[in-house]
Length: 140
Image (cartoon, rainbow, N blue to C red; front, top):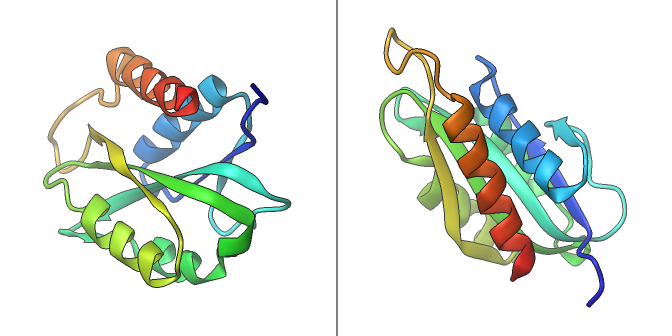
């Protein structure tokens, strides 16, 4: 079986989503890059990470999605962090599908430190769970 080509893109103000992106990229054998770094070449799986702020997905992610070339991406796997509510997956999925991009039905979510909540998250356990999630997605 051929090795899947992967890419990781994320947006992170606080660094929480960046930590998860790096764990996923390490597991996938690629480099994590911050939005708006474009995707070069074709990839089988794009892991796309977002932060949720005040109940909504960061505008930087919303602005990035139209730049993704659906003809170069096999599918997108979404991951996200937030201190409060887990709201990234449905809205990002909808935006990607509107572009004609296939979205995996699974997503990875991690509580992130913020607003004085969830101190020290993502922690080592969260990072290990993110890496396992990525490895499982790469297995198919």
